[in-house]
Amino acid sequence: MRCRLIICAVPVVLTLAALAQQPSIPSTGYPGLDQYRASRIAIFTDDFGQLVRYREANAVLKPSAPSESLVVFFGDSITDLWHLDEYFPGKSYINRGIGGQTTPQMLIRFRQDVIDLHPKVVVILAGTNDIAGNTGPMRLEDIEANYASLAELARAHDIKVIYSSVLPVHNYTPRSQDMFAQRSPTKILELNRWLQNYVAAHTDCLYLDYFAAMVDDKGLLKRDLAEDGLHPNAAGYKIMVPLAEAAIETALGTQHR
Image 1 (cartoon, rainbow, N blue to C red):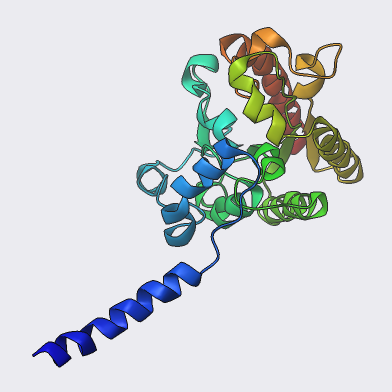
Image 2: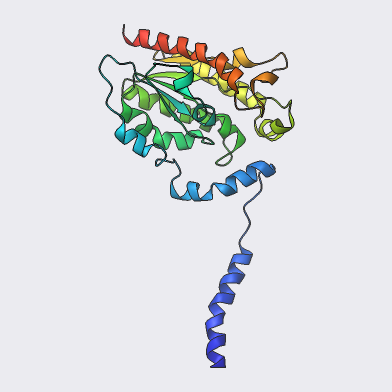
């Protein structure tokens, strides 16, 4: 009996030893980001694009009438937190934002959450979480490649693309320190410059410049537009609304020519 117990315990001891030798997940250098990524492991491994988030909502969505100008707002938490029904009453605008997402995740769900809904226009706001490294380190050229892929998918399905600028960030409050540290203002400017150049070279895309309307004289997000330095508050969204509305009207007008 004693020998059997020892024999049975050997695989367990070996397994524990193997686990102990496995390297730990490298730190990003930002405790808040490390904690966030650790909390998302199940999502990253089971449903990376989070297709389940809007699956039921998409299934029950009624087909839009031919005369209806359906618009999808597509992006991360800045879109996800935006109550479109309150800021755009009476409009056929659908919110398909998911907090924390990066452009690789958005590419995975673009067909289900945009193409299959048959909108006339998609308003894309993405990139800030790529810079932060929410799903791992991202080179600017890889983010830009994902931007281009989203536009090409939309183009293939006659969907007009409005590319929103990446919003500025600030570090004026205690809550904003981590958000700001993870998001290089220089990289934000570089991504916005690329988006502007891309749109200039593709007449079926429009550039929606939130950045210029929300940046202060230091190149940061105006203090009163976000408590945490990243996510717009009511005052921030109030600035964004007419800019988005004007871009959508232009896109729809161009599409109907």
